[in-house]
Image (cartoon, rainbow, N blue to C red; front, side, top):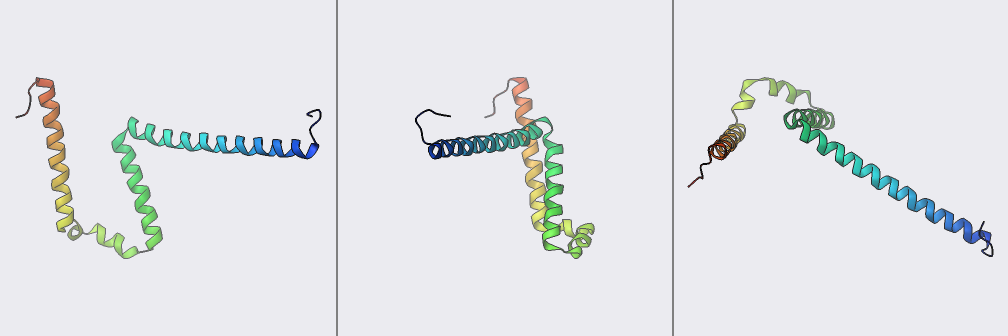
Length: 112
């Protein structure tokens, strides 16, 4: 292959290059996965988060293997817990603030 270079050295060089190529291909695949993840989120944030939460919920239920929790979640009492109510309040507050900012921006009004 290379004149004057021992064959053992050539094999080592080729193995090093092959390893480097494999690492680069792996990095490219990782970047593609990240890009697809963020592109899915950018295209449809609500749908993306819904799918993601469903997936995480299924994974959690599989790991905990609790059918009792599923039945508890179906009952209304589950959603009257203080933590759930606080989460709903925060969500609504953030949505109101977001809509307010959009309205102020469209009207050209600056908040005090």
